[in-house]
Image (cartoon, rainbow over all chains, first blue to last red; front, side, top):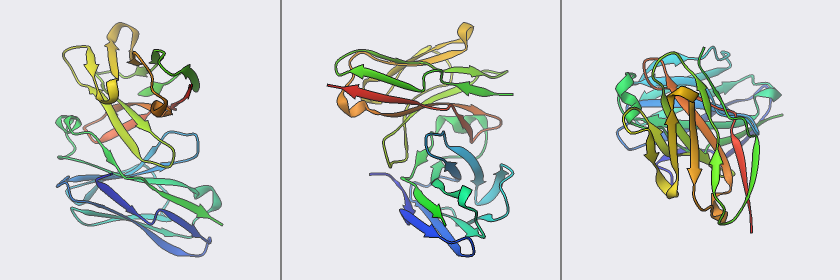
Length: 118
Length: 113
């Protein structure tokens, strides 16, 4: 069982809808991530939160809006998405601040949310 | 710019045979290297990691990997593959000031009985 929980597992939404993806971890990790994974492709980094502050935004379109309400929760708010945004959205967490030493703590991934935009 | 290359898109091996998955990286400094595995419909799970020291690292599920600086490689090996090892395998490099991981394109492993 994964220690990072993502809900929902599947989501179908229209291009005019607003929806949110949720991620939760109770390992005391202080860094949380959103990755996007298209079929047969590697995960691509979208956002990194460190100590509840956004530390990395990989030039993600504004129709994706992350939020970190507290150290255990990470949300991804979706609005006016396009069909090409359909993908598996993976949440991950790791311990520690964004320093080189943080690589001693690996990423812990959730099982993802399979998003389909119609 | 940093990059990770996995030359083999797909590999098929017989159960009980040995396995080697290739990974080459391009990075100016000492890399932090990882192998992750992803089963269908699942998130990624860390198999092993290399930071420094002994260039042969042991991981979970009987996997090991060897860091070769001269070849810029970090190949994953397993002496005897099990049917449950069928999955997608990703090599990754940690870059920047931390918490930034970039993945290779992945190798899909099929295990035949």
